Length: 188
Ligand code: 5GP
Image 1 (cartoon, rainbow, N blue to C red):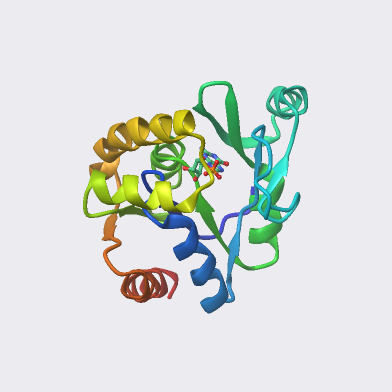
Image 2: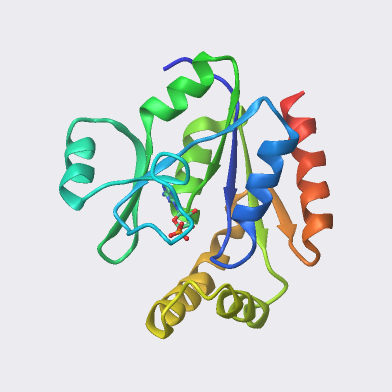
């Protein structure tokens, strides 16, 4: 695979990572978002091929068996998420740099693999209570999936030391500016 730079964004669910990643992509044109494959159903505002490639479990398993995935994780029980090799290749081949929005396990594995070629940023909220409040407000979860995500967030916080940089998201605009500064310095 041709080699470019990679920015890896990970966070416990609800820390605001996806918003930061979307804004960074708008501000830094050489940074392209790697669209992952997933077996979870799309949320109402999500589009296939833009937010994710939404696949059936069978389709996902076939991609894995055919060696088409750069990395993958069963992020929630029975729900798979994976980075497509074709996405990363497409971005690097065009002379751009790739930005990943992936789970902490996938992210720390990628950091190990890509080393200095990558910058791994851990986005965190100030506390678990703040996370709970944000996830509740987002209104995309059922009570069961909300609890599942919060329990997982607590486990995910333990991965923070494996990352190059921790970004505490107290104020979204400030967090975006800080992310932009750090990522720009890395891409230079
Ligand atoms: P959501 O369902 O909220 O879109 O994503 C759930 C979690 O899966 C998030 O932490 C998200 O970053 C992660 N995720 C999304 N795509 C991938 C991927 O390709 N690989 C891995 N390992 N995690 C992913």
